[in-house]
Image (cartoon, rainbow, N blue to C red):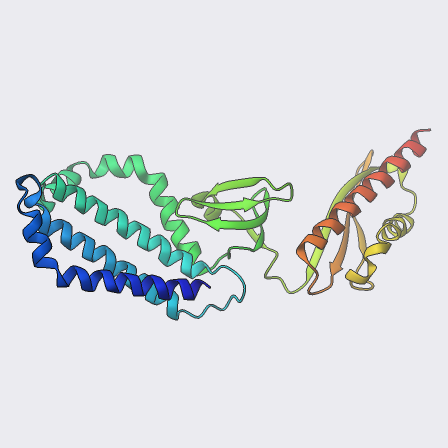
Length: 287
């Protein structure tokens, strides 16, 4: 569908360029009849043609690019889309100079005097832009990947020039600046070969007498999902014991091809079952 739309888009833009060059002299002669806009007619025409040519290059790349990610949105296409946006912004700046009748040389001279102030004000945006372009083309993460970035965990919804959009398990949309993403530890769960789910919880030390028994009770509560979990993959580990609490990690491996939504349901129900067990054991220990 994307390539079909790109083909139609490319055809329309090519027709526009052919018409623009065919009727260039007539268009310019007509515009020059109006003295207030005659001086910028040639410049505006050049900018418009440059925009159309840039758009053609973008559509040709989209049309002939073969994505390795079947059925997923590809970072590369988003990356070249971002480059096109930046170029269009530059063209808009040139068009504004033409409308204001300011030469490019004068504009560059003025900008060079203000360069230090501009860099100081826009340094965060520039940093986010550079890091965003790097992540897009280096494919550190892909749109649609399940990741953990710093303290945030969820699915990548979009990667823009300024931030990464992440949807967590509560369906909250989190915007993380690209500079923060670049400087954070990233765990990509989508790219790992095994689909392991880990659940950490704490329980009063008086409420647990046998770890194996607790593991059996948790597994018993997951009976309805046994066909979606690899046999023998259940694992309950104690990783910290204090005078009051025991910190435990419960893990299991999900079968390949299991639907993401089903994984979320399994995890949510397992968490609720563990909370119920912990509460029952705690109440029993306190009575």
